[in-house]
Each structure stands twice: as structure tokens, then as C-alpha cells.
Image (tube, rainbow, N blue to C red; front, top):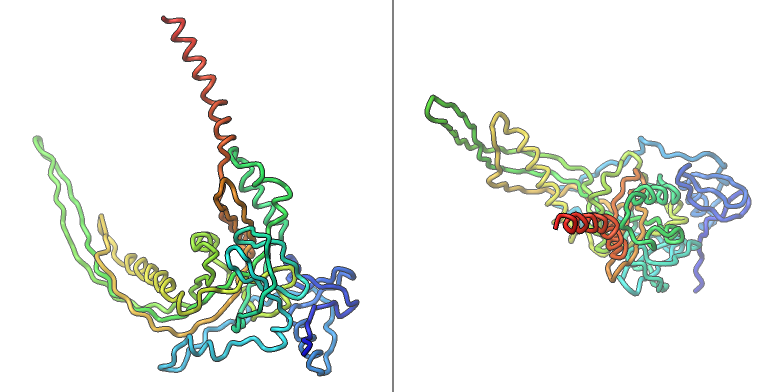
Length: 385
């Protein structure tokens, strides 16, 4: 049975639409019309459902910062992960509008709309990307659109490495810069209530002296603290291919710009499929919450010279879980059999990068700095001797 696909053509002229980060709208390549992504998706959903659909008006689209993205608590006794699995599924129309590609090197499954091409894997740089089956049954709840453009990412990378004298030439090559790709990285967002009990050891030190001796008196104290904190949407990325340190470094994201997921935001970008489910990522969410609890309780112990945490026990009540796609600009390169990954927050521009070192440039730099010193030293010794 033939399947039907939605290519998100311009409702005005039929041209191809792409998402424009600067205006937060779908823009036509031919007539320049701009449309709100949700309006275009609704238009095509109704059209393919044989329902009368009003053509969306071309307009400057914008996200309402007050968009309601509220945490919904599950019913008492219900597991929030199972509750999420029951309510979040791709519908047939959305599934037909997506294509999947598999990286034969690192195993990434990348999802794109029907017209976006993938030249190489953003995680490992592999150019052998083969069509695959869309196996992700879970539809994202939310998405934060790209605010930073590819040009912004290229400019940020130039700024990042412009004074790095030991950077290999192929990393800064102009053609290489054009390989930067926009990827929506999968995240699980956990909302919980956490309780913690912590024990602390503290000291105060007093010193004084007389004509003969210096005296030191150390007083030791102990304290216990108990607290409860509600956490809303603690993020944990669900992709093993994205290094946790990279994602931690480019956070945080501004959740006020989070919108309900719409396929209208995908043209021109790719979306990574999670390979760690919500259950597998819970432990890392707990670690992040426990660290926050410890820091919060530690700040209540004041007035001492030293404060050390002796132990902390915590318990978590899982209230809600959501699946979101967050924007990242990525560039992968390989140097001397090592992989290097550059990542920039596609919303805020905050960035992190693994920078390789050229051994040839390092040797030349060494010679340029130390060779004249060695020659001068040799000349002085020869003259003295």
C-alpha cells in the first residue's frame, strides 16, 4: 500500500519551506513567505485528512514566551514512565512525514523530514548513512527551536579557535566549517519531589600567642539537616553518542521558549533518536538532584571556618516525565586517530569543543621559541670559556 508524505510546501506558491532560526518561522525558498510552524502542520494534517483547511496567512511567526508547558503529576501509585508510554505515540500522519537514516559507524539513528538530506553523521563524521526504518514509537512532547543559525555557529567556532596557534589546519579549513550540522538532541525531563537528610562536620579555629608560644584552639561541631525540594524538568540526554560532559557544559536551556512538538520545526535539521530510555536515564537524574540537594543543605550551615559533608541520604518521588528535543550545532573531526567534537547550544550560543593539537605546529613552535635561546646560551658559554 502506497504511503503518503508531507513535504511542507509553501501554501502560497508550492515552494519548499525551511525553518529560519532568526525569525522562528517556516520560510519559502521561492516567494519568501513566512509561516508559523504549528499553523503549517495543522494545515497539512487537516488537508491530508480530507478536512477543509484554511490556508495559513503569511506572517512573522514568533513563539509566545508564556506558552504553557506545565508539569502534570500522575495519579497516586501510578508509575510516571508507564503513564508517559501510554500517552505518547507517533500518529500515522507524523510517521509518514519522517525518514530515518542509520550511521553504519556509531549506530546513530537520525530522523529528518522528507526533503532534508544527510551528508554525514554529526557524531562521528561517517559519510556512510543508509536509509532505515523509523523505529521510534515515542513522539516528543516538547521542542526548543533553534535560535542560533549555522552562520552564528561558524562565527562562534572561528572565535573559539582564532588564537589557538597549535590547531591543525584541516580543523580550521573553510570547507570543514561548512560541515557543521544542526541536531535536535533527545532529552528526558524529570519532575520529582526529593527528600534528603545530611550530616555535616564543622570547625572553628581560634589562635592567640604570648611572649613564648603560639596557641591554636579548634572547636569541632556536628549538624544535621533535613529538607525537601520539588524539581521541575531536570534534563538528561538520552543519547550515548553525545558526551555527557559536552551537554552539561552547554546547558542551561531557557525553558520559557519550549513549545509543544511540531514537525514544522524540523525542516533543515535532523533529530537524533534516543538509545537510552527514560528508565535507564533515571539514575543520572537522581545524581543531579542529589547534588543540588547537598548544595542547598550545605548553604544552611553557616558561621564556621570549615564545613564538610559526612553523608547524605535521599529519596525521590517521581511525579512526571517528558520527552523533549533540544537544539545543538555540532561538528565532528578526526585527527591522528582521535575523535574531536564541537557542540554549541542552538538556543543560547554557549559552546564547548575538543581541540586537537598539531604535532608539526607544536614542534615548529618549540623551535621558534627555544632555538634562539639555545643558540644565544651556546654563544655565551663559548665566549666565557
